[in-house]
Image (cartoon, rainbow, N blue to C red; front, side, top):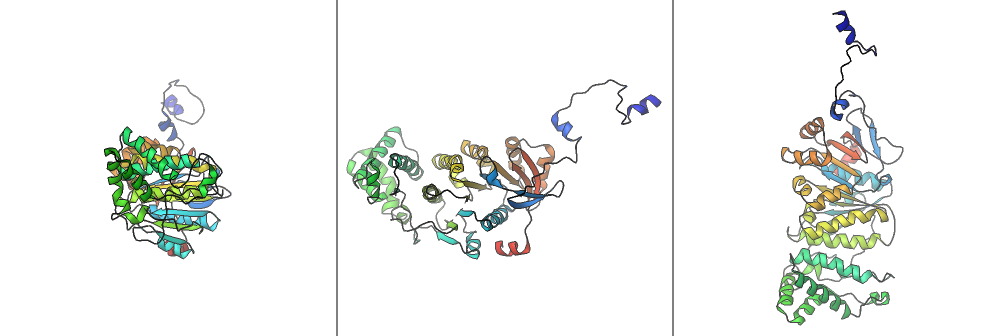
Length: 395
C-alpha cells in the first residue's frame, strides 16, 4: 500500500515504469489554464478572451493578409460585430466600403457622416460595367475588362456553351471597336460602350446562337431591369465610409448588382494604395454562382497588394462551405470569427477548422456575441463587448 501511495505523489520518481501513448487532445487537457493571448500594442478591441478575461486587441493588417470571414447563424451577433469593427477601424482612419443586401448599415453610415448609395432599378446612382480607366497606361486593361465582362455575362445569362462563349468574346471585342477603343491605351479616353451596344452587335450577327444571347440580355436593355446595367456612370467613390444598398432588387438580380459594385470598387482601389476594408454581407448570393464566386475568391487573393481587407459574412454556413470557392475564400482569410452555430452546420465547421469536442459544444451553446476568434495560428474564445456610446450608434 505504501508503494502504491508513493506512486501517486508528484515526486518525479517513476517506480511503475508503465508507458502510455496519448493524442494531442488528451495532452491539451493536462494544461487547462494555458491559453493563447491575442493582446497587441496596436489595433482595435474585438472583445474579451473567454478563457482568461484578457482583452483581444488585434490589427488585422499585420497578418499575411487583412481578409476576414465571419460565420454564424441568424441572431448570433454577426451584424453587431461587423458594425462595431467598422466603427472602430473608421475611427483609426481606415476607409470602409460595405455591400449591404438588406440596407441594415444605412443608419450607421449616416451617423458617421458616410454615404449610402441605393443601388436599384430606379436609383439615381449608376455604374456602367463597360467603363475603362481613361488614365490607365496598361496595354492589358481592355483584355482584363473583357475577361471580367465574360464573368458578368455568365452571371446574367447562365451557363454558356463553348460556341456561345467564343461568340460572346468576339461580340465584346467588336463592341469596343465600334467606339474606337483598341489595345492602344490612348483610345481608353473614348466614350465607353454600354450594354445596349453589345446587344445591338449580337443582333447584327444574325446567327441563332447570337440571337439567343441577345434574347438573354433583352431584360437588361429594354425590359424591366434596364436601369441596372444600361446606364452611364454618374457615381464616384469619394466618401471614406460608403455603403451600397441593394435591398430593393429581386433576389436573382442581387448577384449581378454585387458583381458590378465589386468590379467598380476594384478599379477604384487600384488607383490609390491606402488601408481599406470591404465588407460583403450575405456573400452566399455571390458564392452560389460559380463565376461570381470565383471573382470574389480572386478579389480575396489580390486584395493584399492594395492594402485592402475583405470581410466576408454569411449565415448560410453549410452551403458556403460546400463550395470550392467558399472554402478557398476561408483559406485566403488570415482572420476568421465563428459565432453561434446550429446543429446542422457544426459538423462542417468542425471539419473545416479542426475543432475539439469542447469547442463544438461552446459554439452550439454560445450566447449572442460569443464564439471563436481565429488569427493566424492562434485561436481563442471571444465575447464581443461595446461601450454604451457605441451601442447607441450601432443600434
